[in-house]
Length: 496
Image (cartoon, rainbow, N blue to C red; front, side, top):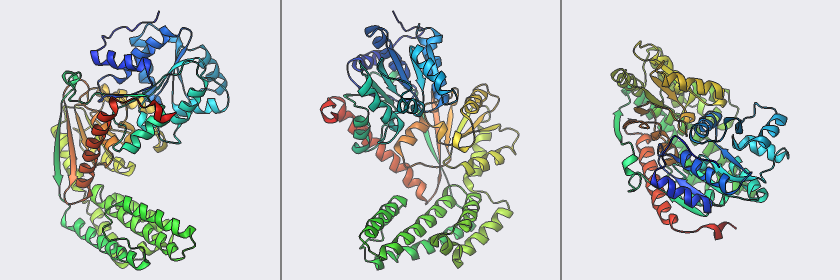
């Protein structure tokens, strides 16, 4: 008989695990409240009620997979040799052998999807499929593909989906529920009476900076070109008002022009080029507002190398050329974005604490890293994804170095936002804002896992960053409202 060990389940974990034993369940818990342990409870129940079956656990990354394997080893009496980690680095033949002999299989969804599509494995004897970070379960994602195989193949199908943040709209949440055949939703937010005593409080503070006069001048020049191009839209006869406020609006308009091209509307070709022009200018403004002159300079080099009409029009524009000329002079004079200077000041004050810094762009990570290395009190390290140059083994090693206090500042892209237990970090600094409620929640979850945590949000005044922050907050509030309404309903009939 399989048992849990070395942890005492909390009441809410037992209640949720009971639901998950009987229904395909979407489990939504704040970070640090034991989603994985709740899934382990359900896994033990399934193994005992369905002898000679297996558990398949799908985390999105190898570092997270390694972490979950350790939890199964520590918190169950399943023999370690039967708790297996499958990765793409293992040969397909060996993966097949390991899969067949294992009681618990932990693997990324992409690895399992490939093996299923090549008929190397069958999910016939899998009595529980656990999908971690379930907000990654959109239509063509690997999670969704594996769930479909599982529903068709398993003799004893049961699905658990885990996340702290499924999405801020009913459409997104419904899509996840549909794709994963969810029947019940179990949600406990920070204020729920069952979990409130276990929630580590987080103190959130805004720190605002202002662009210096010279950078405002650059911004004004680029913005004037942007506004000038924006005024051309109504001339194309599409009755689009000038209240386009962000990249999303421009992308929607670009899609509208593409539909017009399918109708043989020749004017729409210019519309595509015009919106592309506007999107590039908008991105240039975003880099200036949120990242700094180095990012602007690198994007300018990229635009110069492009052959598109939009890129050529931008690099040949007199105002843009002048803006870049001013930018180059400021870089030579070592002018930094005020957020970078503020970040260093904060980190010097926090030199005895471990801090995670989040930013959206790889180039910004390099700039932050090089700048902070100039200060002997600050020991920074970067954590980036595989696509940006770090293997998953290197990612795990970096987290260990940070936890052992060899370094006191961890600078991350989105790889650091999801799932990973980065122990001991008491402060998270958001170098830039994200409009996504999912990413905002994931970022916040990286601190305060062992004790109360703090969050500092760096904001450039009078820029889109303020809007991004409030957009994420609105979406999060909407998400909570939708989920509370869904919790008491049975969803199965909708997804058959």
